[in-house]
Length: 191
Image 1: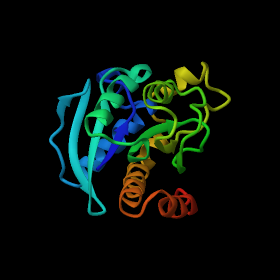
Image 2 (image 1 turned 60 degrees about the horizontal axis):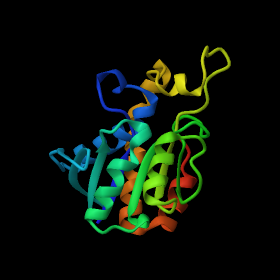
Image 3 (image 1 turned 90 degrees about the horizontal axis):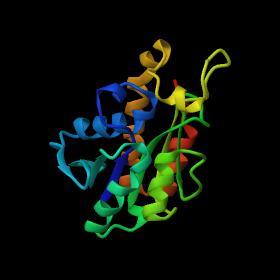
Image 4 (image 1 turned 135 degrees about the vertical axis):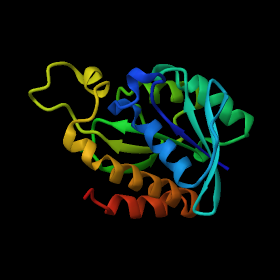
């Protein structure tokens, strides 16, 4: 089994924000595969689903972003999953909007959700980094303000395609493993 964690914040205030992109991807993956339903467990919402012929479990921590590890670790421990079987999907400031990258291990680059997961699970889990880009020069605020804003209209128009490509990346990871998935995902450019 693979645990697919979408990082985000619970509550209506955060639903359409950039920082909830991880939630959006996992919700799309579960819906696309007719999985679910989501149930409350491990301080989060969990739903079984399958992609690429593999069994997966989606987890949306309800602990708020900065405490995500408190949901991820007990879930991974319950299913006796090694970090390499945990895929964390998150928004990434350091990638242009819509660009995807898979990687295993590494630092958190200031992403507090990743920092919390690393604190509880160690750094060796797999990440699907979904680009949101940096704030434009005219943005009045810092990066924390930017990630908690709704997508710009042109981003909103492209969001469905980004979510679909993210689900494809999860399916590739589940069915073919990290190296093969990286080779495919990293060659594809956003449309």
